[in-house]
Image (cartoon, rainbow, N blue to C red; front, side):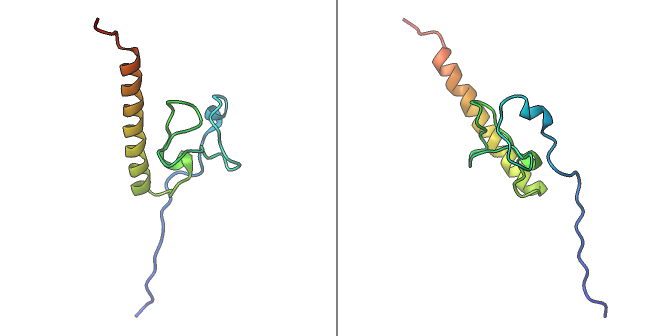
Length: 89
């Protein structure tokens, strides 16, 4: 019997964050967007996920990060709406 063989298919490459660098969003020396555990960048209200953050570099990880970023963005917008909503007097 032949020994088992495993392979990896990589779709994409490193992060393409040249435009991001012009916005003031912090990136590391590899060009990956820096995020905290909630996928927030250093710019208020801006979240990042997936390969551009150089996390797990797997689709399942990216999907989880994307879900976290979406939840945090929703909460951020909800807080803004609450602060800017007209007061009923």
